[in-house]
Length: 309
Image (cartoon, rainbow, N blue to C red; front, side, top):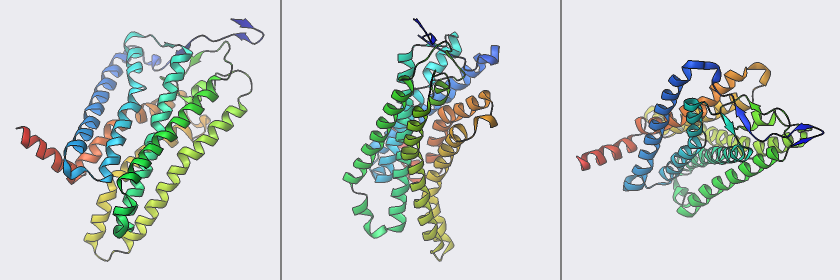
């Protein structure tokens, strides 16, 4: 359709990693391997936390939902990416682009909020041990998980609506491998000021606020660790938080590099590599962090293996 502003965009072209040429096939097999390992690792954690009675605690309740979220989070991006790498068919309709952006934002923010809930759980266990059972009863845990998904739904809905109510004319080439907020927003015609304000507001409310709460929880935990006299006691407290702290660092560290750094300091190819890390690699690393560094999970895994053998 033509109008005074030009030709209306009816599809988006994702350039992705087309600059790699023949090396795209190698990237395809690498991403496929990492994706399958991620699915297997997170599915294993979900199964263990459901079947083993020793893992029916608030921490593993949150961990199960975190693994579910990571499966859905990476699945919103990777299968389509694999198709584009294999068949070189990078065109997406606006509806498909909207759907991908919606679910990516939904599960990304839900994961962010679940990490916050896990930080509060560790704070309650370490700093309020006498009140832990009351602070983290089942109703509270279910409510925190439900709130995490609700935050994700609100963010996914507002981000997608803000982006796709803007007009798009002439330019339809996205320098990315999926429909992320910033690359699509750069293509919009006309004034994008209010869309940027809305996106920034939602980001501060539902991403930076959880991050601030995580920092507050760990400051309190650090104070509690410093108040423990014995070295063994300090090591025990730190070991209960180390896995979660590593996952938080990976998640928020890569997200900060991708969304909070000025675009002038990074090329679009660098942005894609960072995005590839937090959409594909990080969801694979998290199950290893929580299993290899967690005696209870490793014990549950050994019991299940011995039982079946």
